Length: 87
Image (tube, rainbow, N blue to C red):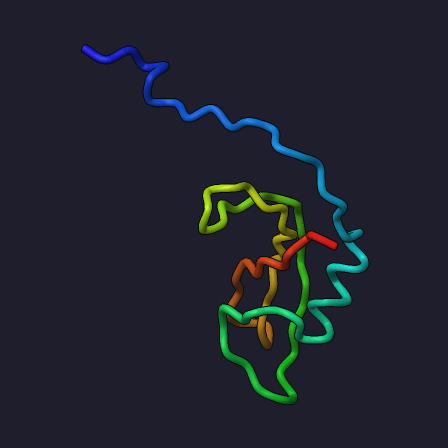
């Protein structure tokens, strides 16, 4: 029977990176500098209800910092929109 610890992948620290402030990440969102998860059009209202910082694994398996904004479209649909946090 395998040891439970064998199933855990340990992440090694490679290097620190500079990240955007939450305000800078919000500006990227306002300017449309992201790949939208939901489609929207001119005149739609987007409301940011929350945000946090997180990480995602890139194609090489490295963890990349992201801000995740909780967005509501026209008071209906809502989703989590990632924005790169790297400067």
